[in-house]
Length: 413
Image (cartoon, rainbow, N blue to C red):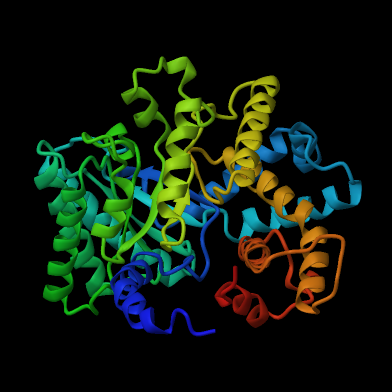
């Protein structure tokens, strides 16, 4: 049959432009490690030993709150005693080894307006502390700043902090996991302005083109639905021309902007779920990673208050994970135990099923579930995330990392 032979050239010509645009806009999921959380600390409170201190405080809170066994019982997520013991071992090791995976030194809401002289000095101190932490081997895998947003009132100060931080840090050597967070984004033009600023810094500092990426913090209603009724997130990602690395959701700024009363501002409010679903659809296939927000209910006070806060935090972490948000935001050292307990329980609960199904898939063997290539890719990503955060030990995975990465690159329908 050759009915379509005569129009194939026309079909190719018709689709060449859209094919190229789609390939550019949707390069696929980002490869490499992604953190399971971010910790924001005011720039005036950041010191080189902060991650170590947070880890120590988290362990102290865990001991004072009844220990790992009690924490897991509060979560109610692990029924098998042997598995609970294993999670406990991994959790304690994590808090001692790498309590913070992603640290953001905050010059925005967590710092406020202290005048140019004080903020300039805080930038200098932050860069020095990063250098000291790197020398000591205590720098988290991901680190960076959130600077003041590009709205008119704070634009000049935000750009001044951005320039001073990047310039000073470049002189020391940029960390591999450098993250810059653009806050309170309301227009596509602000993203374009950020790209222009980073291009200019790269040129002035003789950095490789594209070395500086950034996150778009989603915390304004305008980003979700613009003035014409369309979401701005897709156009914002496109305007980032490959520099947008992530989109963290801001729980309280977003829900407050909608007029939701303080008592009901939550990661699980229906308005929050709507915003995050728009984020998921907009970021799918772009390589932009998503992060859920935070809960401001802290595990402090008497045992009942600590238990309630741990239970709430753990439930919200698990909820986010089940909905495809593999990163969140922690505000207090006491939230680290519940963060990792819920995260580890999630990955370990899914481990046996994923291993069995992937083994069937890779061996082209019929199993209880007939998985598509896209699902195999998702299972490979699941295992790699579990390995990266310490929830899963490499000895528990019978597949080579190369095989898992190969699945992530495999195309299929």
